[in-house]
Length: 317
Image (cartoon, rainbow, N blue to C red; front, top):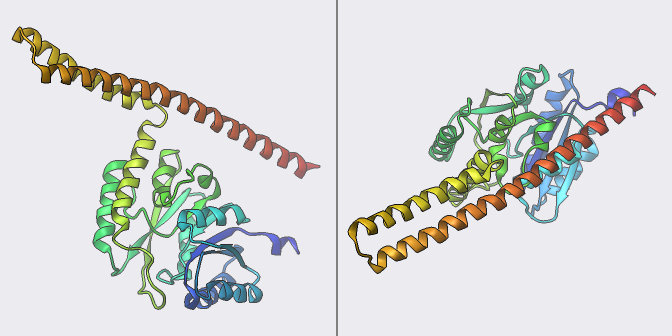
């Protein structure tokens, strides 16, 4: 392979599950767009446990187009795992998440990537333009997310382009890809958005139903707690324990002023003391876990620095 052929500037990660009819037109549109671009692209399909002919369609496209690569999950593992598999296989430092359903056209990929290539932003999300199903759900989700996380973009869960190192800071958790922007901003990365047209699905079926709404809300609260208290868990559990101890103190004061005790009040005091002590103990254990995680992050940072230093040394030999 020549140096030009081996160079890859942008890796487009395309999770696909039962999208047989969309694979060939997706690749055809990519080929047309990429041919007119100066940067080099690759498309990494991740077949996430498809039960139709999706894998055969991907293999056929890989045989015809050198920029197509493929990964296969034998069973459905979800978009978060699919994106992680694609990230591990990708050969470039700029990644793009793009679904295979053709509701977003490949012609918009260069606009999504441009701010990252220019160094203007670390992660760029697309802002959906046009009519689409579940618009109300999307507005509620994005509104709640902006309230909790104060993110300066309107559409958090959409197609996006981002630097490779952002994936290094993402927790390996199911469905947390929805909060990639939130976690990236919390880690100091810059974010922007560009409008991206949304088109009606021409083939296949949507994999997302209303049953994901409660899961999404619980994930949102989990991410909020992780970002707010993961490094200082004693702050959260200590505040909770203090509030519970305050209830015990108020109940005890009421007994003193009343001059005589009643069994329900004593039960409240005893319960509050036990729960308060348990909350503080949980916070102390959490502090130990947080310290271990901080040490792990520092070790990984030092290993990355050593690896980068080794690469620089090899390049000068």
